[in-house]
Image (tube, rainbow, N blue to C red; front, top):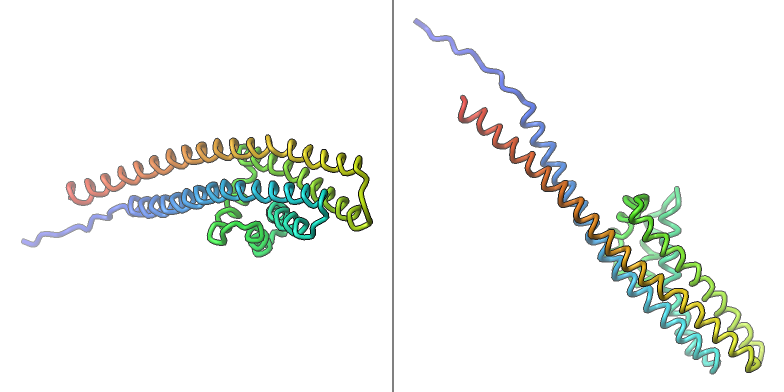
Length: 232
């Protein structure tokens, strides 16, 4: 008497679901790394931005009262940092965004080339979100004052090369430099504060999503083991 073995058709969906979850988890881990690296890079970039504009303002003030070309060159070098970062931001906002141009602008702003891609991806991926958008709004406001500083520098340069500036005019121009610095100082503090809050919120969300995905994946593994090993 022969025993007939009936092939049991086992469901494929648990394996497919497990593969999808693994892929999703890897993607989430990659996103978490990019976001964390991007936030850290922006924090470093803010320090470089701040140092550049302070160096520029100090050098411009020295140039105003001395007409020393070395101070003018130092002013241009310092101001180049926030202007380069502004160029990168404007490029990232474009519909026909050119990553190479944004990359070059960030590098010109003294950001480390190894960090720039994370900065670009964070901005492009999440720049629309209200929390990160609030950070960008502060950046935009600060850039308004940077453009004022650039215009003021050009005016000081014009008047200096044209001849001696009256004492009263020197005082007014010096006060304008101080006014711009006073306007930028709280924006730098606010940028750092909002960036820190956004970083903590993003990390909390990513932690919850990754832990949830990992728990679901673990349950699937247990199900597959129980169904295909213990019950058959």
